[in-house]
Length: 268
Image (cartoon, rainbow, N blue to C red):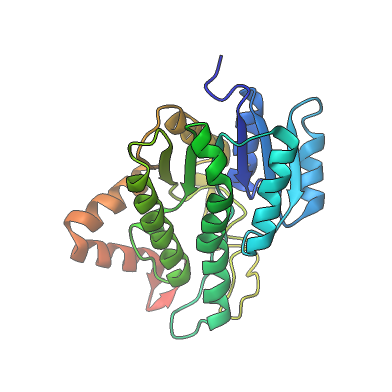
């Protein structure tokens, strides 16, 4: 019997990438899963892949507080409670600070940070009654500011800090709070990344051939939740980046700069 069997697991942003892989992982473990996204057709297609499984879908934009509140209300109506919440919904961006619009910065922060805050606030009373788990899918960018991803980095730093504060508040309550930081993972997040004018950029410039798959990432997250780990940093590159930034920040500046720039131009 898996630790998630029969438990109600809410996963935001479950129609693509890591979120979709998490939905599949928890459904196959016997959990009752609820997920949301902005594209109903993708959610419906996902639901059709798992006939007979407990999968509740709901169209919602996590940047909007009332939509988050309604989603959690609908989940409780469908399943009676919530045991675990995985704040996975997110968006990235690619633009230099001097070129990016305020609108891009706001959209990224609204989805990544405020979406986590809204969903957690409305799910937390149920999770606390069950001594459950709150998870934030953060990023290496939450430990190390990345060029061209200023808003993304800021939002993930904010997620890490907010969840760390919440974790400390709930440390002796039986409710577990953790954040996970995938490295570069095959995901739609780069294709949907906003440009300087808050428009989707389309095809990304990263080579996804050598990246961790979304399915492998989901398995790591599942096992970390089962063990109630404090944090999870994935991939060798991710672990190395966090280590270097902590102990050798000047060297990390140069290495990160060299990775993202070529001849003074942002190429990744």
